Image: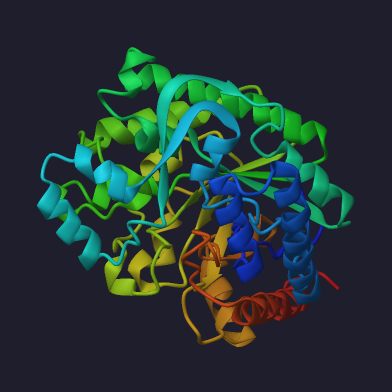
Amino acid sequence: MNISRLFPVTVVGSWPRPKWLLEALRRRREGAISQEEFDAIADEAVLLAVKYQEDAGVDILSDGEQRRDNFYSFIAGKVYGIELKTVAEIVDLVPDKSRFEMLLRSLDVPAYSIRNPVVTSKLRVGPRGIARDEALFLKDHTIRLIKVPLPGPYLLTRSSWVPGISDRYYQSREDLGFEYAKILREEIIALRDLGVFFIQLDEPVLTEVVYGPDQSQQTFMCAALFSRRNPREELEFAVELINETVKGVSGIKTGIHVCRGNWSRREEALLKGDYVPLMPYLAETKVDQLVLEFATPRAGDVETLKDYIGDKELGYGVVNPRTDDVESPQEIISRVNKILRFMDAKKIYLNPDCGFGTFAEAPVNTPKTAFKKLRSMRIAAEELRKLYGEK
Protein backbone atom coordinates (compact mmCIF):
# COMPACT_ATOMS: atom_id res chain seq x y z
CA MET A 1 0.00 0.00 0.00
CA ASN A 2 1.56 3.26 -1.14
CA ILE A 3 0.58 6.89 -1.45
CA SER A 4 1.60 8.68 -4.64
CA ARG A 5 2.90 11.94 -3.20
CA LEU A 6 6.25 12.45 -1.50
CA PHE A 7 6.52 13.17 2.22
CA PRO A 8 2.92 12.37 3.23
CA VAL A 9 1.86 14.21 6.38
CA THR A 10 0.17 12.08 9.01
CA VAL A 11 -0.40 11.79 12.75
CA VAL A 12 0.46 9.25 15.40
CA GLY A 13 -3.13 9.16 16.60
CA SER A 14 -4.47 11.09 19.56
CA TRP A 15 -5.85 14.61 19.75
CA PRO A 16 -6.72 16.61 22.90
CA ARG A 17 -10.31 15.93 24.01
CA PRO A 18 -12.75 18.80 24.66
CA LYS A 19 -13.86 19.22 28.28
CA TRP A 20 -17.39 18.20 27.39
CA LEU A 21 -16.09 14.91 25.97
CA LEU A 22 -14.07 14.23 29.13
CA GLU A 23 -17.26 14.73 31.11
CA ALA A 24 -19.06 12.28 28.82
CA LEU A 25 -16.24 9.74 29.23
CA ARG A 26 -16.57 10.03 33.00
CA ARG A 27 -20.35 9.71 32.93
CA ARG A 28 -20.22 6.66 30.65
CA ARG A 29 -17.69 5.05 32.97
CA GLU A 30 -20.03 5.67 35.90
CA GLY A 31 -23.03 4.32 34.00
CA ALA A 32 -24.79 7.68 34.00
CA ILE A 33 -25.19 7.66 30.20
CA SER A 34 -25.57 4.83 27.69
CA GLN A 35 -23.07 3.85 25.01
CA GLU A 36 -25.42 5.33 22.40
CA GLU A 37 -25.60 8.65 24.27
CA PHE A 38 -21.83 8.71 24.61
CA ASP A 39 -21.35 7.95 20.91
CA ALA A 40 -23.53 10.90 19.91
CA ILE A 41 -21.29 13.20 21.96
CA ALA A 42 -18.06 11.57 20.80
CA ASP A 43 -19.15 11.85 17.16
CA GLU A 44 -19.00 15.64 17.49
CA ALA A 45 -15.54 15.48 19.05
CA VAL A 46 -14.30 13.28 16.20
CA LEU A 47 -15.66 15.72 13.63
CA LEU A 48 -13.81 18.53 15.40
CA ALA A 49 -10.54 16.57 15.44
CA VAL A 50 -10.96 15.70 11.75
CA LYS A 51 -11.62 19.36 10.88
CA TYR A 52 -8.38 20.43 12.61
CA GLN A 53 -6.40 17.81 10.71
CA GLU A 54 -7.96 18.56 7.35
CA ASP A 55 -7.48 22.29 7.77
CA ALA A 56 -3.83 21.72 8.70
CA GLY A 57 -3.32 19.71 5.50
CA VAL A 58 -2.86 16.22 6.92
CA ASP A 59 -2.84 13.56 4.20
CA ILE A 60 -3.51 10.49 6.37
CA LEU A 61 -5.60 11.29 9.39
CA SER A 62 -7.08 9.58 12.45
CA ASP A 63 -10.20 10.16 14.51
CA GLY A 64 -8.01 11.61 17.26
CA GLU A 65 -8.76 8.57 19.44
CA GLN A 66 -11.59 10.67 20.84
CA ARG A 67 -13.66 7.69 22.00
CA ARG A 68 -10.74 6.18 23.94
CA ASP A 69 -9.73 6.97 27.51
CA ASN A 70 -6.14 6.31 26.47
CA PHE A 71 -4.20 4.64 23.70
CA TYR A 72 -4.48 1.08 25.00
CA SER A 73 -6.82 0.68 27.98
CA PHE A 74 -9.89 1.46 25.84
CA ILE A 75 -9.67 -2.18 24.76
CA ALA A 76 -11.41 -3.12 28.01
CA GLY A 77 -14.62 -1.73 26.55
CA LYS A 78 -14.20 -3.67 23.31
CA VAL A 79 -12.93 -7.09 24.38
CA TYR A 80 -14.70 -9.18 26.99
CA GLY A 81 -12.40 -10.61 29.65
CA ILE A 82 -10.54 -7.37 30.41
CA GLU A 83 -11.21 -5.00 33.31
CA LEU A 84 -9.80 -1.53 33.88
CA LYS A 85 -7.95 -0.78 37.09
CA THR A 86 -6.34 2.53 38.01
CA VAL A 87 -2.70 2.68 38.99
CA ALA A 88 -3.91 3.39 42.51
CA GLU A 89 -5.78 0.06 42.52
CA ILE A 90 -2.91 -1.91 41.00
CA VAL A 91 -0.34 -0.51 43.39
CA ASP A 92 -1.54 -2.95 46.06
CA LEU A 93 -0.18 -5.77 43.89
CA VAL A 94 3.32 -4.26 43.63
CA PRO A 95 5.93 -5.94 45.91
CA ASP A 96 7.30 -2.66 47.32
CA LYS A 97 4.28 -0.39 47.58
CA SER A 98 5.90 2.61 49.26
CA ARG A 99 8.80 2.65 46.81
CA PHE A 100 6.44 2.44 43.85
CA GLU A 101 4.26 5.28 45.13
CA MET A 102 7.38 7.44 45.46
CA LEU A 103 8.32 6.54 41.88
CA LEU A 104 4.90 7.57 40.57
CA ARG A 105 5.28 10.99 42.18
CA SER A 106 8.77 11.51 40.79
CA LEU A 107 7.70 10.53 37.27
CA ASP A 108 4.63 12.78 37.27
CA VAL A 109 2.27 9.83 36.67
CA PRO A 110 -1.41 10.67 37.35
CA ALA A 111 -2.14 7.54 39.40
CA TYR A 112 -5.89 8.03 39.64
CA SER A 113 -6.58 9.05 36.03
CA ILE A 114 -4.52 6.52 34.05
CA ARG A 115 -6.33 3.20 33.89
CA ASN A 116 -4.72 -0.09 33.02
CA PRO A 117 -6.41 -3.13 31.41
CA VAL A 118 -6.08 -6.40 33.32
CA VAL A 119 -7.05 -9.80 31.90
CA THR A 120 -9.61 -11.28 34.26
CA SER A 121 -11.20 -13.95 32.02
CA LYS A 122 -10.93 -15.54 28.58
CA LEU A 123 -10.82 -12.94 25.82
CA ARG A 124 -13.60 -12.45 23.30
CA VAL A 125 -14.03 -9.48 20.94
CA GLY A 126 -17.35 -7.66 21.24
CA PRO A 127 -19.72 -6.80 18.38
CA ARG A 128 -18.18 -3.34 17.74
CA GLY A 129 -14.74 -4.81 17.13
CA ILE A 130 -11.69 -3.11 18.61
CA ALA A 131 -11.76 -0.13 16.24
CA ARG A 132 -14.26 -1.06 13.54
CA ASP A 133 -16.93 1.29 14.89
CA GLU A 134 -14.40 4.14 14.97
CA ALA A 135 -13.28 3.44 11.41
CA LEU A 136 -16.82 3.28 10.04
CA PHE A 137 -17.71 6.71 11.39
CA LEU A 138 -14.42 8.22 10.25
CA LYS A 139 -14.76 6.73 6.77
CA ASP A 140 -18.17 8.35 6.42
CA HIS A 141 -16.87 11.81 7.35
CA THR A 142 -13.63 12.33 5.45
CA ILE A 143 -12.29 11.73 1.97
CA ARG A 144 -8.71 11.62 3.26
CA LEU A 145 -6.81 8.39 3.79
CA ILE A 146 -7.33 6.88 7.24
CA LYS A 147 -4.91 5.63 9.87
CA VAL A 148 -6.14 3.55 12.80
CA PRO A 149 -3.78 3.07 15.75
CA LEU A 150 -4.15 -0.19 17.68
CA PRO A 151 -2.36 -1.25 20.86
CA GLY A 152 0.31 -3.75 19.85
CA PRO A 153 0.29 -7.39 20.98
CA TYR A 154 3.38 -7.07 23.17
CA LEU A 155 2.08 -3.90 24.83
CA LEU A 156 -1.24 -5.57 25.61
CA THR A 157 0.39 -8.74 26.88
CA ARG A 158 2.93 -6.95 29.04
CA SER A 159 0.45 -4.49 30.52
CA SER A 160 -2.56 -6.74 31.12
CA TRP A 161 -0.88 -9.89 32.45
CA VAL A 162 -1.17 -9.83 36.25
CA PRO A 163 0.01 -12.99 38.06
CA GLY A 164 -2.60 -14.33 40.42
CA ILE A 165 -5.41 -13.06 38.19
CA SER A 166 -4.64 -13.61 34.49
CA ASP A 167 -3.01 -17.02 34.99
CA ARG A 168 -6.34 -18.43 36.09
CA TYR A 169 -7.43 -18.19 32.43
CA TYR A 170 -4.20 -18.42 30.43
CA GLN A 171 -1.50 -20.91 31.31
CA SER A 172 1.30 -18.47 30.57
CA ARG A 173 1.98 -14.93 29.45
CA GLU A 174 3.05 -16.41 26.10
CA ASP A 175 -0.34 -18.04 25.63
CA LEU A 176 -2.01 -14.71 26.30
CA GLY A 177 0.32 -12.98 23.83
CA PHE A 178 -0.57 -15.29 20.97
CA GLU A 179 -4.25 -14.86 21.77
CA TYR A 180 -3.81 -11.10 21.41
CA ALA A 181 -1.93 -11.59 18.12
CA LYS A 182 -4.83 -13.64 16.74
CA ILE A 183 -7.41 -11.08 17.85
CA LEU A 184 -5.44 -8.17 16.39
CA ARG A 185 -4.81 -9.94 13.07
CA GLU A 186 -8.54 -10.52 12.65
CA GLU A 187 -9.20 -6.86 13.49
CA ILE A 188 -6.64 -5.63 10.96
CA ILE A 189 -8.23 -7.71 8.22
CA ALA A 190 -11.68 -6.36 9.12
CA LEU A 191 -10.38 -2.77 9.09
CA ARG A 192 -8.73 -3.35 5.72
CA ASP A 193 -12.05 -4.53 4.35
CA LEU A 194 -13.65 -1.31 5.62
CA GLY A 195 -11.19 0.74 3.58
CA VAL A 196 -8.63 1.74 6.22
CA PHE A 197 -5.28 2.66 4.63
CA PHE A 198 -2.85 2.33 7.55
CA ILE A 199 -2.79 0.31 10.75
CA GLN A 200 -0.30 1.42 13.38
CA LEU A 201 0.58 -0.97 16.19
CA ASP A 202 1.61 1.01 19.27
CA GLU A 203 4.55 -0.59 21.12
CA PRO A 204 6.09 2.21 23.24
CA VAL A 205 6.90 -0.21 26.02
CA LEU A 206 9.80 -1.56 23.95
CA THR A 207 11.93 1.37 25.05
CA GLU A 208 11.10 0.58 28.67
CA VAL A 209 12.47 -2.92 28.07
CA VAL A 210 15.92 -1.61 27.16
CA TYR A 211 16.11 1.60 29.20
CA GLY A 212 14.18 0.69 32.33
CA PRO A 213 15.43 -2.79 33.25
CA ASP A 214 16.15 -1.87 36.86
CA GLN A 215 13.07 -1.69 39.11
CA SER A 216 14.40 1.57 40.52
CA GLN A 217 14.38 3.07 37.02
CA GLN A 218 10.97 1.74 36.03
CA THR A 219 9.04 4.44 34.23
CA PHE A 220 5.52 3.04 34.46
CA MET A 221 5.57 2.95 30.67
CA CYS A 222 2.21 1.43 29.79
CA ALA A 223 1.74 0.00 33.29
CA ALA A 224 4.25 -2.81 32.74
CA LEU A 225 4.44 -3.61 36.41
CA PHE A 226 4.88 -7.35 36.40
CA SER A 227 7.22 -8.14 33.50
CA ARG A 228 10.79 -7.62 34.57
CA ARG A 229 12.60 -10.15 32.39
CA ASN A 230 15.76 -10.40 30.32
CA PRO A 231 15.63 -7.59 27.71
CA ARG A 232 16.85 -9.79 24.86
CA GLU A 233 14.19 -12.41 25.58
CA GLU A 234 11.53 -9.72 25.87
CA LEU A 235 12.45 -8.12 22.54
CA GLU A 236 12.52 -11.48 20.79
CA PHE A 237 9.09 -12.23 22.22
CA ALA A 238 7.81 -8.84 21.05
CA VAL A 239 9.07 -9.43 17.49
CA GLU A 240 7.47 -12.87 17.47
CA LEU A 241 4.11 -11.46 18.54
CA ILE A 242 4.23 -8.57 16.06
CA ASN A 243 5.10 -10.88 13.17
CA GLU A 244 2.36 -13.30 14.21
CA THR A 245 -0.10 -10.38 14.20
CA VAL A 246 0.66 -9.30 10.62
CA LYS A 247 1.25 -12.82 9.22
CA GLY A 248 -0.65 -13.26 5.96
CA VAL A 249 -2.04 -9.70 6.04
CA SER A 250 -1.96 -7.80 2.73
CA GLY A 251 -3.75 -4.89 1.12
CA ILE A 252 -3.21 -2.51 4.03
CA LYS A 253 -0.16 -0.59 5.28
CA THR A 254 1.15 -1.70 8.66
CA GLY A 255 3.53 0.03 11.02
CA ILE A 256 4.90 0.03 14.56
CA HIS A 257 5.09 3.14 16.73
CA VAL A 258 7.83 3.20 19.37
CA CYS A 259 8.41 6.22 21.61
CA ARG A 260 9.65 6.89 25.14
CA GLY A 261 6.48 7.87 26.96
CA ASN A 262 3.95 10.65 26.46
CA TRP A 263 2.11 11.08 29.76
CA SER A 264 3.93 14.23 30.91
CA ARG A 265 5.25 17.48 29.44
CA ARG A 266 8.27 17.15 31.72
CA GLU A 267 10.95 15.72 29.45
CA GLU A 268 13.05 14.68 32.47
CA ALA A 269 10.20 12.41 33.62
CA LEU A 270 10.29 10.41 30.38
CA LEU A 271 12.73 7.79 29.16
CA LYS A 272 15.97 8.78 27.46
CA GLY A 273 18.06 6.71 25.04
CA ASP A 274 18.51 6.18 21.31
CA TYR A 275 17.10 3.39 19.15
CA VAL A 276 20.43 1.51 18.82
CA PRO A 277 19.49 -1.40 21.16
CA LEU A 278 16.10 -1.78 19.46
CA MET A 279 16.99 -1.51 15.80
CA PRO A 280 18.22 -5.09 15.23
CA TYR A 281 14.85 -6.28 16.54
CA LEU A 282 12.68 -3.69 14.76
CA ALA A 283 14.48 -4.61 11.53
CA GLU A 284 13.17 -8.18 11.95
CA THR A 285 9.53 -7.15 12.11
CA LYS A 286 7.38 -7.76 9.03
CA VAL A 287 5.66 -4.38 9.02
CA ASP A 288 5.94 -1.73 6.31
CA GLN A 289 6.83 1.27 8.44
CA LEU A 290 8.58 2.23 11.67
CA VAL A 291 6.94 5.27 13.29
CA LEU A 292 9.66 6.79 15.47
CA GLU A 293 10.29 9.97 17.43
CA PHE A 294 13.24 12.23 16.65
CA ALA A 295 12.09 15.74 17.51
CA THR A 296 13.00 15.22 21.16
CA PRO A 297 16.72 15.06 22.00
CA ARG A 298 15.88 12.11 24.28
CA ALA A 299 15.61 9.95 21.14
CA GLY A 300 19.20 10.38 19.99
CA ASP A 301 20.38 10.82 16.42
CA VAL A 302 18.52 9.64 13.34
CA GLU A 303 21.81 8.26 12.00
CA THR A 304 21.21 5.22 14.22
CA LEU A 305 18.72 3.98 11.60
CA LYS A 306 21.21 3.92 8.74
CA ASP A 307 22.37 0.31 9.04
CA TYR A 308 18.96 -1.14 9.93
CA ILE A 309 16.10 0.63 8.14
CA GLY A 310 16.55 -1.48 4.98
CA ASP A 311 13.46 -1.38 2.75
CA LYS A 312 11.13 -0.18 5.49
CA GLU A 313 9.44 3.20 5.40
CA LEU A 314 9.99 5.69 8.19
CA GLY A 315 7.27 7.60 9.97
CA TYR A 316 9.63 10.41 10.90
CA GLY A 317 8.89 12.32 14.12
CA VAL A 318 9.67 15.94 13.20
CA VAL A 319 7.69 17.91 15.80
CA ASN A 320 7.53 17.49 19.57
CA PRO A 321 3.89 17.16 20.71
CA ARG A 322 4.71 18.26 24.28
CA THR A 323 6.13 21.74 23.67
CA ASP A 324 4.50 25.14 23.27
CA ASP A 325 7.07 26.19 20.69
CA VAL A 326 5.92 25.48 17.12
CA GLU A 327 8.68 24.11 14.92
CA SER A 328 9.21 26.20 11.79
CA PRO A 329 8.91 24.60 8.34
CA GLN A 330 12.62 25.24 7.86
CA GLU A 331 13.48 23.31 11.05
CA ILE A 332 11.46 20.37 9.75
CA ILE A 333 13.08 20.57 6.31
CA SER A 334 16.52 20.52 7.93
CA ARG A 335 15.60 17.36 9.84
CA VAL A 336 14.35 15.69 6.68
CA ASN A 337 17.45 16.66 4.71
CA LYS A 338 19.53 14.88 7.31
CA ILE A 339 17.79 11.57 6.82
CA LEU A 340 17.74 11.91 3.03
CA ARG A 341 21.48 11.24 3.13
CA PHE A 342 20.66 7.54 3.44
CA MET A 343 16.92 7.12 2.77
CA ASP A 344 14.81 7.31 -0.38
CA ALA A 345 12.41 10.28 -0.27
CA LYS A 346 9.58 7.93 -1.31
CA LYS A 347 9.90 6.08 1.99
CA ILE A 348 9.63 9.04 4.36
CA TYR A 349 6.37 10.06 6.04
CA LEU A 350 6.18 13.09 8.33
CA ASN A 351 4.46 12.87 11.71
CA PRO A 352 4.72 14.23 15.25
CA ASP A 353 6.81 12.25 17.72
CA CYS A 354 3.66 10.96 19.39
CA GLY A 355 0.03 11.91 19.95
CA PHE A 356 -1.19 15.19 21.42
CA GLY A 357 -3.58 13.55 23.89
CA THR A 358 -2.35 10.03 24.61
CA PHE A 359 -4.21 9.95 27.92
CA ALA A 360 -7.63 11.58 27.81
CA GLU A 361 -7.34 13.35 31.15
CA ALA A 362 -3.66 14.28 30.74
CA PRO A 363 -3.22 15.83 27.26
CA VAL A 364 0.26 17.13 26.47
CA ASN A 365 -0.87 20.07 24.36
CA THR A 366 -3.78 22.23 23.23
CA PRO A 367 -5.69 21.85 19.96
CA LYS A 368 -4.50 25.32 18.88
CA THR A 369 -0.81 24.46 19.26
CA ALA A 370 -1.27 20.96 17.83
CA PHE A 371 -2.93 22.46 14.74
CA LYS A 372 -0.04 24.89 14.24
CA LYS A 373 2.50 22.06 14.47
CA LEU A 374 0.62 19.99 11.88
CA ARG A 375 0.29 23.01 9.60
CA SER A 376 4.04 23.62 9.86
CA MET A 377 4.61 19.99 8.83
CA ARG A 378 2.35 20.45 5.81
CA ILE A 379 4.16 23.62 4.70
CA ALA A 380 7.49 21.83 5.07
CA ALA A 381 6.20 18.87 3.06
CA GLU A 382 5.07 21.14 0.23
CA GLU A 383 8.50 22.73 0.04
CA LEU A 384 10.23 19.35 0.19
CA ARG A 385 8.14 18.11 -2.73
CA LYS A 386 9.34 21.04 -4.81
CA LEU A 387 12.93 20.37 -3.82
CA TYR A 388 12.84 16.62 -4.52
CA GLY A 389 10.98 16.33 -7.76
CA GLU A 390 7.25 16.43 -7.08
CA LYS A 391 5.65 19.39 -8.79
